Image 1 (cartoon, rainbow over the protein chains, first blue to last red):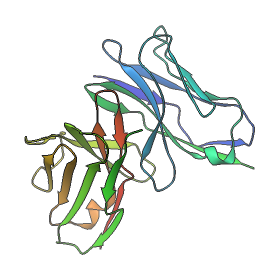
Image 2 (image 1 turned 30 degrees about the horizontal axis):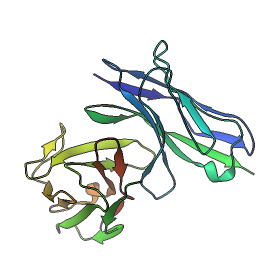
Image 3 (image 1 turned 90 degrees about the vertical axis):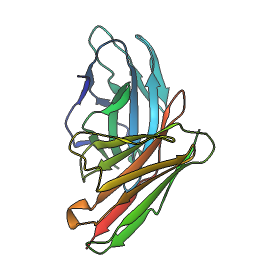
Image 4 (image 1 turned 90 degrees about the horizontal axis):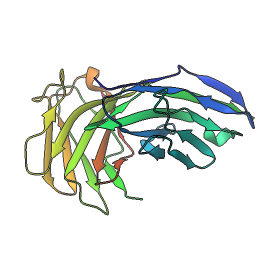
Amino acid sequence: GDSVTQMEGPVTLSEEAFLTINCTYTATGYPSLFWYVQYPGEGLQLLLKATKADDKGSNKGFEATYRKETTSFHLEKGSVQVSDSAVYFCALIGGKLIFGQGTELSVKP
Amino acid sequence: GAVVSQHPSWVICKSGTSVKIECRSLDFQATTMFWYRQFPKQSLMLMATSNEGSKATYEQGVEKDKFLINHASLTLSTLTVTSAHPEDSSFYICSARDPDEQYFGPGTRLTVT
């Protein structure tokens, strides 16, 4: 069945460092791909999405490109801030939303 | 964007009692709503999918008699945890889908003592 695999956390970075969180997927067909963010004690917020191959989703300085050839949707940000500390979930939708296991990001001043 | 609310945001109950959690789509109609459960430091586990006016579809391993779901209208779904036990303590998140996207509520923290 469909599945999503994320790099394990926690990831700890200093402020202004470059961020990459890897995400790969297995799916039949060409699902839409998402990154969600969850701040402590809160629900999930959609961060960005891409609906077809080579699409780039972007929001708040975060980017991810839908790579069909490598079945990947890696999340990147050029300069992280302390306020970016959260758990990030990669997901795909194929009938129902399927999440990766989440990657906790901690950004230190 | 669309907003999904949950009530209550947190609840403490005694073992053996039942607790109802409400999920509302505030500015759109959601024919399909989802209930997830999340344990600390873990991903979301889909519990069930509810469609307005019909019975919910439960994921494998989820007790339908324990987690009662009612999707009474296009903007309201409820999850009732019946005869709650400490192992039911968790963070419950609902989600509602419109044609383009799936939106999540802020979650309800349930603690059973």
